[in-house]
Length: 138
Image 1 (cartoon, rainbow, N blue to C red):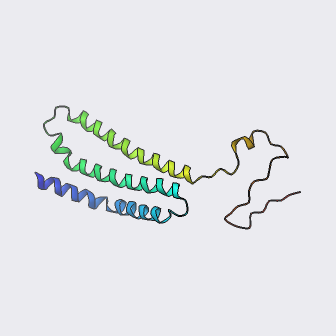
Image 2: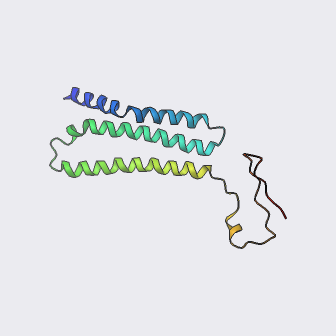
Image 3: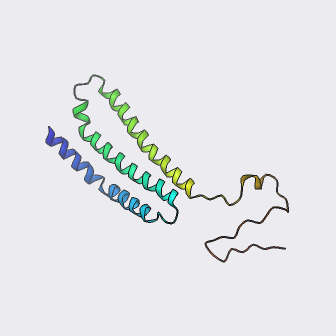
């Protein structure tokens, strides 16, 4: 039976190999972009590593599920519960990506700027990415 578990684990890793390799590549790219925006890169790296770890936990669970639930009278209910927990762990990875996107966002005006627009408000800052963005002043 242990051979079956190992065979199932290896088969599932091979099936998911493109996604696992892509997660490793994305984690490496996030790590290399650390200098540009550390907070965003940190959250993205954590999210990619989280997905990688959760994928291995899910693959391991699929491999040993039949052994764990073999003599359990509530096997179907327990399998549903374990599936929901694993799905929640995966959803947490998407939350980490949301944190990464939010960390990359830099507000370009305070929120109060749009509440009451007056002519006394300073113009928005010039873009730092290109010199083509010019503000027309009259």
